[in-house]
Image 1 (cartoon, rainbow, N blue to C red):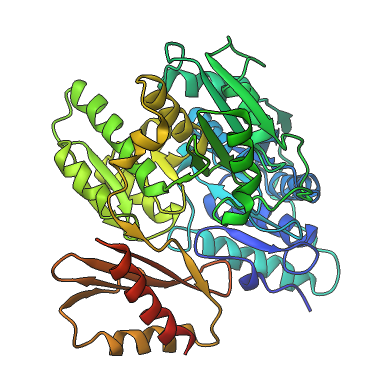
Image 2: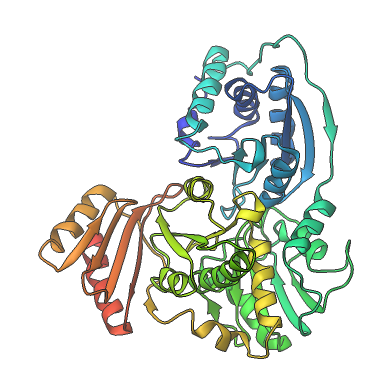
Length: 471
């Protein structure tokens, strides 16, 4: 009985348990299917991976499958996810990075892109790759998968991207003239331990007026200090303590593959991703308008703070709402020619970065905004955070759809507007509160996000909805 790939292929990437739902055989089949479906025989395919113990072997298996079907593989070695996007954008080649992002050490996965960092999702080819790979696995049965040769075996070469990546990011945000800042960075033993010294430090490029205090920069995919998921508050505690201990101006926390960045102010308090989105949006709108763009477009997902579209409109931009998920947002970024996009989960997307998400570039914008004026970060961020937010709250429920329908029925007689763009969103007609319930694509949870004009209203709506969900 071959492995069932539907267990690991999600809406916009692949995640699975190593040795169970994702194996070297399944990865080899996916490498072959990637070349077949995207018609890449005779063309370059980029392959890299993060610091997880299985990533190197998986990258080798994918390389074997892709070469057998005639693709020429460029091995990128150890990379962050946004380094794949940089390489795909600059080399105009499709590629894959092996990572499970913030998931625990037992997991690994794949994030894939077409040439130019154009995303692959369930709607744009990912399921076709899954089905083609499944056919290779099913043909092999219980035996190790053997990929038939497609005329020629492709070549393989290596290419280091770190220097080019660092130089490119520095060309987008000039930090050389900011006031001296002390910056604590928690890499969580993930790929930011490689990228931070290259981009913000002096490992490759000239020194910036930044004193970097490193936390857990050693690359270790077993995550010995804490999980590489800064969305969970307990994983920020070491960073918060270090910011206070060192009297730092700012703290930065990256997830395992370093495509997301969370920000901590000088008091050790989190700055919400919505506030970061609004802050970066204002900078990117101002820059685009200076360059002659009349009404720059900013993308935000439907569970970012209402403060984001309000600020975008007041700054002379146009806000476009979309569903959650990097593949969907990147597609809208391209359609709208948006200058910037942000999500509640601390994914930040830039037109100047191939419409792709990069935590490091977002961090550089925050450092620039902070270092170009004298206010502490807590005061600078305050204007971008006017509402009371619940944060993301997970509920493990047996029937997610039934739970959402119970909530919809309970709010049917309220003066509210309902949307099903992404899960269930209910917004008060007078604008005083809103909430969203959506099923996770990667975990067995129903996720709640809500916001209101006061803490009391936010808590009342939150408690009512969660009471119904958990029922």
